[in-house]
Amino acid sequence: MSDTPLVSAVIVSYNRREDIVETLTMLSRQNYKNIEIIVVDNASADGSPVMIKELGLPNLRLIQMEENVGVKAYNSGFEAARGEFILILDDDSFPASDAIGKMVGKFNQYPTVGVVSFNVKDYSTFKNAPATTASSPDGQPFNDDYIMSFHGAGAGVRREVLEKAGGYPEEFFLYFNETDMALRVWNSGYRVESFPDIVCYHKSAQTNRTSQRGPFYYTRNIFWTIWKNYPGTLMWKATSLMLFYVFYYSLEQRTLVYIRALLDAVVNIGKITRAPIQKSIAKRFRMHFKTPFTMYS
Image (cartoon, helix red, strand yellow):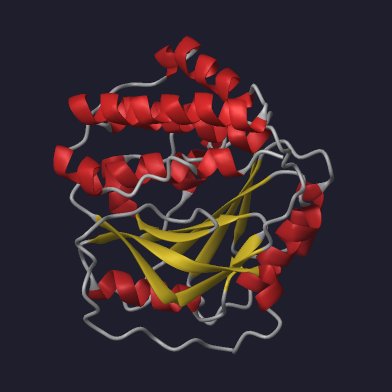
């Protein structure tokens, strides 16, 4: 195994021209040099592809979608990637200069880790950030009390994990795709681990984000995640809990967005394929059921 294996950075971009240019510029300044960059543009209408090409980065490939297909575009990037490890970024996030090298080190140190989740910090902290961050202690014990997902604005994945567990659920379009994938990663025998010393910066921009869109897609996709992955009794318990939240918060917040999301989940249930994971994994997994009900405004 090479000490500096190829890392493929996969980014999906949609109408964030200035953000994607900054992300690509910061990637070009990484201490780790064996990187290829794959940008999948989701049919942006703001001139993003032109600006990306004008950067002239020699290790960059641009894939242009004919329409906005949501998170499905990431899978196109994953398929095009040649690296042993794949770095997943948003178009408004970028890793600290030492992050990719640390990510590769964690993968080499922990062969059962399939996903390295970065410490995703708000962009506002970037200017005052140190040039490098302290490494976490070697041999840090894993947390066996519960298991978690990862943040899609900064995460590394082994290629073999994507081949075994699959990529993002294309039917989701937006949001909660990381959780669905994480369940399949754990079920495939790999771990998802977060390392606080591997830092990524995320702008958390409000561009292209509306008050209704987040609650709708999160609610619908939580139902689909449960129905796809949870075994028997746990599926029904989780569904009952989500139904309670949907009706309770619909009344409390005086909105129909959660009801619409539930109806969409039921009407389009044929888009998902049920493949229950191990019960022990579902029981230990920390699912954020209340997330969509904190987003409405």
